[in-house]
Length: 214
Length: 242
Image 1 (tube, rainbow over the protein chains, first blue to last red):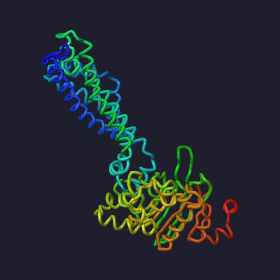
Image 2 (image 1 turned 120 degrees about the horizontal axis):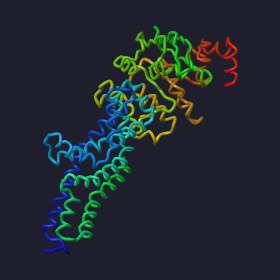
Image 3 (image 1 turned 90 degrees about the horizontal axis):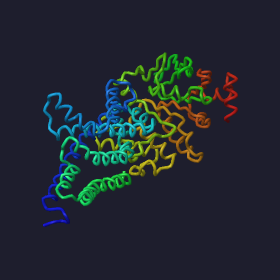
Image 4 (image 1 turned 135 degrees about the vertical axis):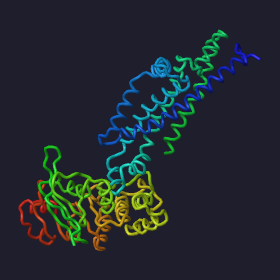
């Protein structure tokens, strides 16, 4: 059976690329969200602590470095140092650190956007800083964080295509392999664009719905 | 029995010397009213008492406990001092009941059911029991401020500090808040109130404190302050606002 110029084997190959992209994104972004929440909270601390400094350096550094560079350094760089690292491990690590920095910034600005009066009301009841953060500030800040956070997630999903530079056969690299076999660049890239759209568009919808609901 | 003992407190904001050696005392069960021009330091003094602002020198004792920045002690102290803000500062994401129970649950570790009971009694005291399931944004300013008072009462504090509790309210809503405060005062709550509501002061205050330029210029019972103020500044201020 043939879909235009694509054989079943080609379709399966693209499907496998899709799954690898999803696996990469789910793991990398999942870890990135955890890092982002952690470092964002540490950076929002009004006291000048060591952890705040570390968080600031982390966030500023990884926001300033291109994702592609992180993939290259994370894989070839580490291998050149003589350590053994899997492609998947390297690209997931890069995506996590990259996502974490951006989400960290969103978490921090979200926390800081909640008025001082809310902090004062919380601590005046005798609550600690972490308790006030947890019960008073974060529930209000989440609302503010969701739209930009989902924007970042969508950006990272698309940016994950750069993992092809280290030979991780995600969707775009899978597509290039198929093009080499079929000479149908428009058809293949059009299909891939559709697949990215199907992954990303629901995220936009989710963002709108959550915004309305919260 | 002294509830509040402020001893020679100094405070600067940068170059600005906002509190210049303030000393004042409040007995258990007394209501004090702090008044004076804006910028005289009255709100700052109030905020220093539960360490929302640090002090540069001097000492503050609440029920014989020194107010210190040491975290665990400070938390305990704050749990025992109610604070009512000019802008209410209710938690917008929590119901009225949620607002009043939060401190009980998180700080006092009161079980859910018991916290609910205490909160409903506190809400009844301020006449808002039927609003327990509503959210702050659904209430008028006067009602929100009464919820804020209930939030303080629920913690069973030794003293409540009020920072201009009615100055953000529309005129027709001020009365209901003052009424609640008057009831509290009559029930024997120790209160220190920053306010220009002179009618309230006259009826409710045991002591009035006039701050001027960061100094406590005059103090005494309302009868004295209103009838024969000792200082020129105090006399002029009272004439201006009455």
